[in-house]
Image (cartoon, rainbow, N blue to C red):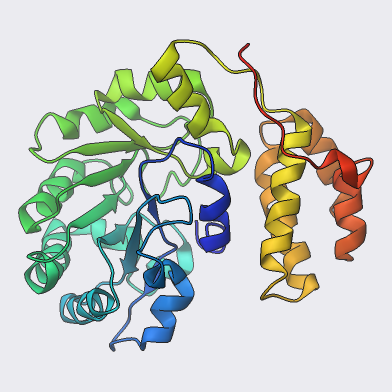
Amino acid sequence: MEGVIDAHTRDLLTRHPGFDWTVTEFVRVVDARLPPRVFLRHCPELGQDVTTPSGVPVALQLLGSDPATLAANAEQALRLGAREIDLNFGCPAKLVNRHDGGASLLRDPCRVHAAVAAVYDAVGNEVPVTAKIRLGFSHRRLALDCAKAAEDGGASRLVVHARTRDEGYRPPAHWEWIGRIRRHLRIPVVANGDIWSLEDYWKARTLSGCRDVMLGRGALADPWLAPRIRHWLATGEQLSATPWQARAAILADFAALQRTTLPDRVVTSLIKQWLNHMRQRDAEAARRFQALKRINELETLLDGLCSERSECKRSCLEPA
């Protein structure tokens, strides 16, 4: 989710009850301890009790391959106030993998273990160390070995994306494979991948046996997915589909927050990026995206999100 889930997005997505915790974009670690400003740029919540404004905890995520450098940066993050260090072994991006980061480590479980153990030895007595993996790099034969390596290294929770690196984001997600991993681990396992709806959520839980799931692209496609799940678990009733006015409202709020620090041309690009996620699962969002994708002026783009700006008022979802 690099370039998508920043502090403003975390703020907006957690304003309604639904998420139990969130994770930052990864902080890329190469061969040196990074200065505090890098951590604060990725995780400004370090100065706010390390929670979103609504009080949802934020874990700081590191991505790298050198155990000593990861440990040094985990210590730096701890000094700045981090309350959880998450390690990314799941990023499938070719550039990241070419530079020996993310899912590239899944080709050797020993490297996963070394990275987790180094960070745990550095900060594990102070804050939890967690990790995210995929089912492997080009095949699934090492999926369980990598999961056990993370657990044995000191990870207290493991998120598993239900595809290999080579499978990218192509459906289907193999939630049943997460179940095979979960049955052999002592630590909590969290299911991730292709959870777009309440039905997907329940299927992922059923096939994986996991109590919890992680939402990424699904939360951007429908910003009310987590509250929808929470409401169903609490009451047994399904909320109605998220109306376009509510989607437009969160994009308008997002623009207002981003404009405080970024130029309008960058904000315009970010709104299109989020709208592109929404259009995958919503016909009106798809129509708006086609109509607005070549607009480069922020005010014009915002006007195009609603027939009138007054429409951009936060809408409450009603039971179906």
